[in-house]
Image 1 (cartoon, rainbow, N blue to C red):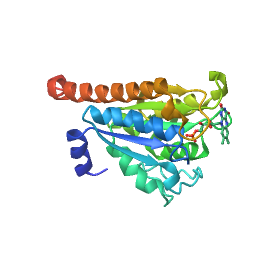
Image 2 (image 1 turned 90 degrees about the vertical axis):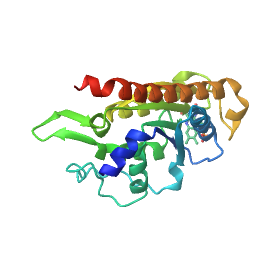
Image 3 (image 1 turned 180 degrees about the horizontal axis):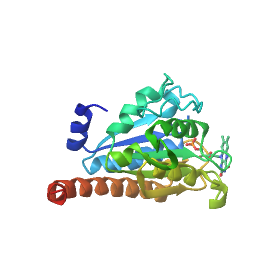
Image 4 (image 1 turned 90 degrees about the horizontal axis):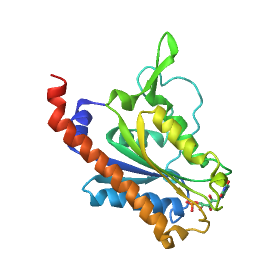
Length: 222
Ligand SMILES: Cc1cc2nc3c(=O)[nH]c(=O)nc-3n(C[C@H](O)[C@H](O)[C@H](O)COP(=O)(O)O)c2cc1C
């Protein structure tokens, strides 16, 4: 990330919505968009991307990224990386596929491995690039067809744990149960409201962070 990006980050607050279902008019899509809209209403700059619009290869485990936070695979992720670095927060949504996240979300997360750095002499010492940048925030949204949370399996943790490892604090996890057909989420006022509330809280967290940075940052660091 160049100096220009660092400067930009300090002036504008931005949230990136990431939809991990290929159904653009599906439930994950509408709930991620609802959360992001609510953040926009709080005055935050937002963008929503659909992972299905990008070709994202699986991480090969080549470790080629380990010198400079850059993945060597030249595909759609190269368009997503700068957006991730620019954004102060992420709203990541996935449908539940066999008790876990979708393959697109898994590939996306694995390819963020380039943002994880390990001490050269001790792999038990590591941190995400977002920690170097001062920490970021996230909302996780999971959708499933069944009505019991156990049928969601590991999908929520499958996103929350890696995001935490990458230096995002999870502000909210929205678990949408009982949604099967495309767009059913639009008729579910309760889950729409829950998603909006999560987006709003995320926005307010970012605003508080900015306020505190401006008010206390310089004096705290002397
Ligand atoms: C391959 C596949 C696996 C699924 N596995 C589960 C599951 O384990 N548990 C569940 O409750 N629903 C499961 N579903 C249902 C979807 O999670 C549900 O239809 C969801 O609303 C899809 O989200 P979308 O509209 O954003 O694509 C599965 C659907 C597919 C296509």
